[in-house]
Length: 291
Image (tube, rainbow, N blue to C red; front, side):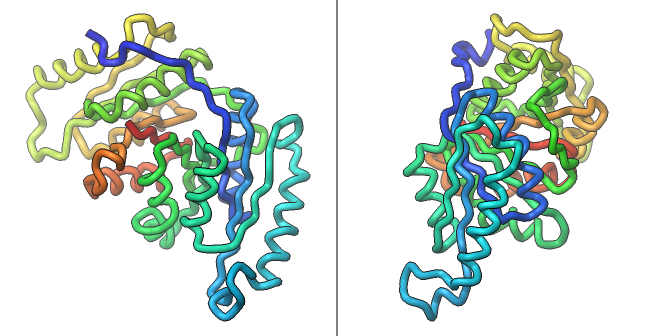
């Protein structure tokens, strides 16, 4: 019996692209534009002016230099060819970063977020306890994270040939599978479903791996119109298994589920460590879908 019975088609209306005008944010823009074009959605380009100097200024008045620079950078972004023909709106506000972003998400009924993330030593801190983590943990809508190893693809048009779904057999992952299947159908892409058996010290018996393979096959909806999918079950560290499978197949997207924070306010730290590991090393974006 398939675990996913009803598969509503993906419908997106409002996409949020937080930007700090960095190279990583620029790498995320083609993905946001492609998604908006495909679903006829509106993009909200969001920048928050945050500065310690605001402490000494009257409430609601950011430093002139920061505010002016933000307006200038947003004006440059406004002229980007990638936005031609799209419905979009620039949002520049001042305040605490997450407070302002969460208000934007509510006010503009955001149902999809595209997020550029930077690498290096600061990335672990960013994903472990700052804005990116708050977005991925707290929002109920899907988040497409474009990590530091994703090549700049200014001409990306949204075409995907290979999609990887990382399965953990948890109920909150069902909606992520819906997205993976729907995206594979719409793009006529190869869908690869991967499950990593670990981190046990001793490899499981072969019969257990076969059982997991059968469970993967049973997860697919019976009416899915897919290029014949591939099922992979391997013993090993989950991040290594997922990253290797994605690299071997030159995947265009990794999709995984995340526990809905409305159900569990303190997701297992391991889950976020795994996301961090994938984001740091993947050559394609990571789509996390709360269930």
